[in-house]
Length: 347
Image 1 (cartoon, rainbow, N blue to C red):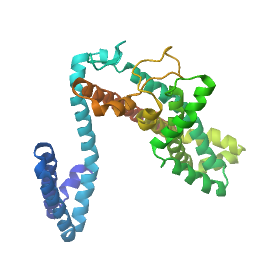
Image 2: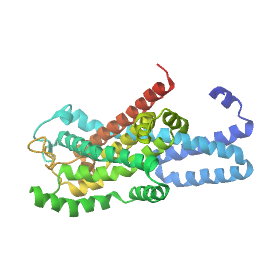
Image 3: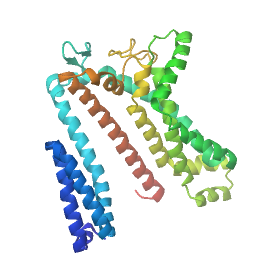
């Protein structure tokens, strides 16, 4: 059924509920932006209208609420995008390309000079290290849980992995700072305030539950008929897993890895706790045990005292993060579409 048919099929009550509810919700949102003092009253009016209409016409009210919750995700994304871009405009206008490619001095608040090069490099290095930790270990854990582990082990390991995702990131960061940092300092004579390697290692461990859970769901969704067919042709369990199950679940596994990498890119507290607030590149550049700062830790450590052009530069860092995560999302969708075409025999 087309959208036009659905809209045309709405009865009078549905249009009344949707129209009044949309007007009240729109007025509430606009009042928040223009006249905040009225927002509370309009929000109460909207809530009373929803409650009353739900009692009178439950079906149409539920339909309206489902419509609101669905469209709100798109609207929130649009608002966030516009807000980030608008606040980043002043520093882009002032610094130009220097913001993305500028050299020393990179970040000098006294001179109003801002370059995100060290932060982008720190984010890139920690993300690569985290991906090298989370991707292979996460996929291996997913294969073990789904294909190898006996029932009793699966009942223990899977909830334990999911519980790891519930540990606050500040706890991971504190453990990395108090346990891994001293070990690395003693064995490798690293700086006192963390390193990119330690940060990437901790973030990779944090991303493991995400990769394991999503990849395990993807592997478990492979039809048994495909596995049984491989077994009927004489393939061993391991050959079936590597030649049939993993290729068939590749789109889900790639999505799991990209979700894990996305968490690594956006991780804030662990990087802030472990890394020192060093707004320079490591020397030498490829020193993964060196110290610098990431985009997220830059925002977390400086937003409280920032103002003017510095505040705008922090929003520019947010724009870079936003675009990066969006790139991972689009990439995962392209991979999934390509794998669906291959598995479906499409060209």
